[in-house]
Length: 113
Length: 115
Image 1: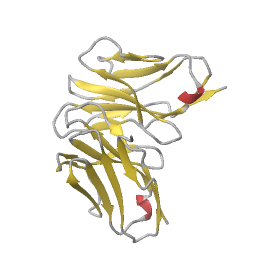
Image 2: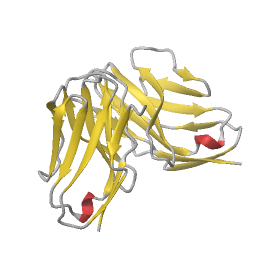
Image 3: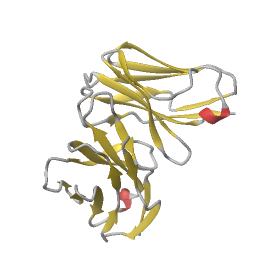
Image 4: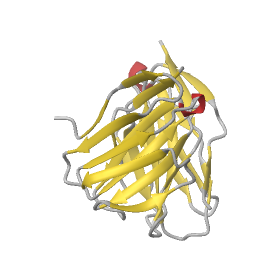
């Protein structure tokens, strides 16, 4: 059983489209995250939710909107996709916001044409 | 704000040899966590090893060990008896214990293990 699963693994779309990436964790963790990994492999936090409450919201364009329907799910919706949004997006979870270990999903490679 | 630096963008090592990856960080906190994560070509991020800053003893996990120098803010990873499966990007990461703070990752070191 996959601990942190995100879908889809690959997403190819045109500029201007709206797309969503879904993430689910079956570890019973309270805290979930979205990270962006750019073409140079640099990983940067985008958002963090603890028990459905937003606790970290880095400087990310308003076109990115996370949604957490329950603590096991954290989806990422992106409006009006731009070329610069092309990256690998990782979902991750930790037991709570104080826990030191991150468990990552396998990533979603987004390509905006 | 904390920063994490990995000064070696790429490294290579012969199979069965030992290699050390460097990491330095900057923080004013006295307690925190440090990690090494591995990202093989499969893209999956895998935790290799972690260290609590309040522990003086260096962490070890099988062939992986760290050299944690708190005063120097240095956290290097040593891989002994390198295997082909160790080929991956390696990320050093810092975890603050302050509420609202998060993991900060270094830029990564691409390690190639050569047969």
